Image 1 (cartoon, helix red, strand yellow):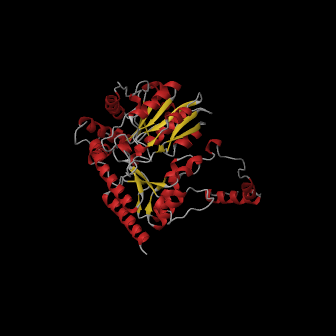
Image 2 (cartoon, one colour; image 1 turned 90 degrees about the vertical axis):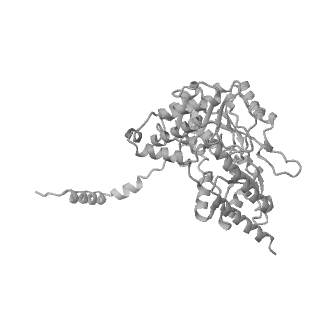
Length: 455
């Protein structure tokens, strides 16, 4: 009787399958039917994938992506270490799906004070994997096939594909720049909505409007009058407002961040989105949140529980402790929410001076990590290409990182396809960087200026 051991048996069976044409059958059995869902059509390209790769390959100074290269505050890092190494071993396990109880409780307490609302931490707050997932939950929860969503340009680039993935139709309305008087530098406040144009975008098909204030990439902080215009149209047309407020603490020159949900008639129709990454300079922790009435958040919870379900417990615990500290220091000079914008305003002013000195005209931002600069005077370095499908600022930014080692993001990436060439002579810089990083950027710019002026 023939006995075959385990390894020999596998070898015998593989040879037998091969002898009866198994290999040829296997190659013929490859799938031929389309596998991509229709909702992914046309949204596969992403500016960050392309420019992050370029920055990693060529840049010596990266002012492209929006993250600080300085650490979070010591008190937050210490809170994370305590959560990670402390005796409460349950912090290494799942916590409540819709938000770690200590975090949702302190968020409700802190923001209830700012909004003038008595927030229930269990129904008015939901924690997400960063603000990015909060946005995804909103579009999936509220947007049906054929619904229109108004997006103000320039916009954070994920809004458009997320609306489309949900089956919706993005409707774009631009902020239009107005030239400043007396030769002053342009401010982000000079970019404004045309009230009649905005009103014309609302229809019976409009389900929501996306508001981003302070705005990425422009740094615009919407004024009370501008917010009241948007609020009045939302109430008139019974439209939701998805309010992306991740840069809420980063406002400069005495400007005030006004929360649209605090305006008359808006609490019941607004979802507020926030970010611990931007609040505490810890973007890699990916802790975000949504706030709003339960009648809206209950639908976000449905999306969340059927997708991500849960966010990292230790990070939530540390953020909760960070907010507890900030509540105790509310309005005091030691508050991180007061100290950080002061530091970033100095960095902003430094980069504004550096860019202006070499002829890249900066648009002075009222908030955020970012400023946009006009590159029109540098077209001799990178001439236009006739009939090119790629916007000029995109080609310029690629040339700059490859030839000068300085990374930035083209402003056209923050516009829809039809409008990309309308604002294609601007690039976006991130100034939330160490002093040494900004100095290195200044050195590159000064050297570039010398090269341009040398005979």
